Length: 184
Image 1 (spheres, rainbow, N blue to C red):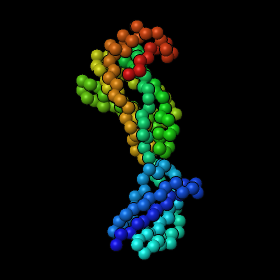
Image 2 (image 1 turned 60 degrees about the vertical axis):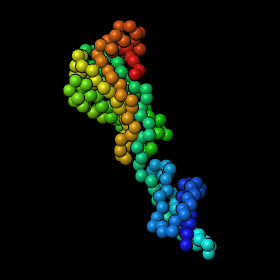
Image 3 (image 1 turned 45 degrees about the vertical axis):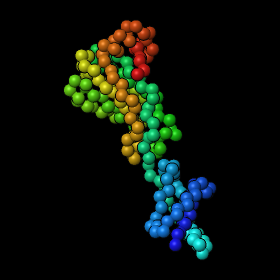
Image 4 (image 1 turned 180 degrees about the vertical axis):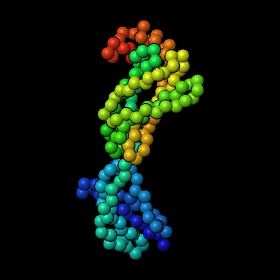
């Protein structure tokens, strides 16, 4: 005997998700592609060759916090002085946050020693300063947003060298507070 289970998820009073499951033994079902931090109401009805069951009473549920599905882009890196690098970025679009943005993480790695450092920034910040960098070492830089649900998508890694930033400074017109920027 085959049982068909029809599940309806209601968001703001509208039935926006219908799930039909065909199973001979069903202990539950997974409803996917729902919005983060959104209240839903669910009800279930079974259907077999004899007919349909009545709908169950509506059950309230709320989805959990998601993680950002995009990284901050573009990331702009510029030289402040011999041992200081500035970073600026465009915030993650609110439609990609999937919850409440807790902040940003910037990870930079000394490519000679593989020493990793991670900075945390508040969600309303769009720039940071990395101090005490060695001008004779290349660094890889990446960043991502995070929510209470976890870390989001990491940006592409940017390889930063003091020499490259110095060359950009000497050949490009200043564009941020007298400092030259480069988008990598």
